[in-house]
Image 1 (cartoon, rainbow, N blue to C red):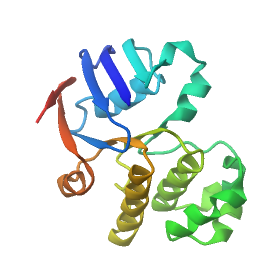
Image 2: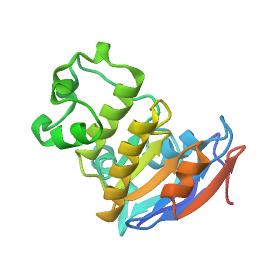
Image 3: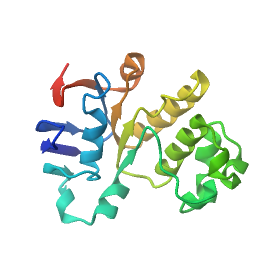
Length: 196
C-alpha cells in the first residue's frame, strides 16, 4: 500500500491519502489546482515535506532512483533524452508486447524521438514505465492526447496492472475514465485534497 501523510509543498496544502495494492484512486479538479504537484511530490521530484511510504518501506530510507523505480511517475508530457525510442528502454525486446498492446508497431522502438506525435510519445512513455514493473503508478493525464481506440488500449493495460496488484494514483479530467477505473475519487482544489 502507498501511504502519504501530511505531504506539502509551497503549492500543496498538507495532503494525506492511501492507495491499496491493486486499487486505483483518481484525483480530479480544475487545471492549476495542484494535481500534478501532488504526483511529483510523491515521486520526490520536487521539494516537499511529509511522510511517504510503500508498505513498510519509507521513501526517505532509500535512494531516490530506487524509490522512483518502485513508485513510477508518468508525466502528461514525457521526457525523452536520447535520439531513438528504444534507447529509453532497459530491455527493448521485453517491451515489445507492451508496445504492440498500445497499437504501435515493433519498429516504433527504432524511430527517432523527433518523429513521434504527441499521442505516440504518450503511449511509448507509458510502455517505458510499465516495462519497469513498478509497484505504484502515478499517472498524470495518461490518455489526454489519445484517440478513443488508444484510450481503450491504455485502460486495458491499466486493468491488467491492477489485477497483478499495482496501485494506481490517476490524475484525469475525464470523469467517465475515473468512473471506469477508480475505486474512489478525490478532489483537488486550490492545493487542498479532499474526498468527493
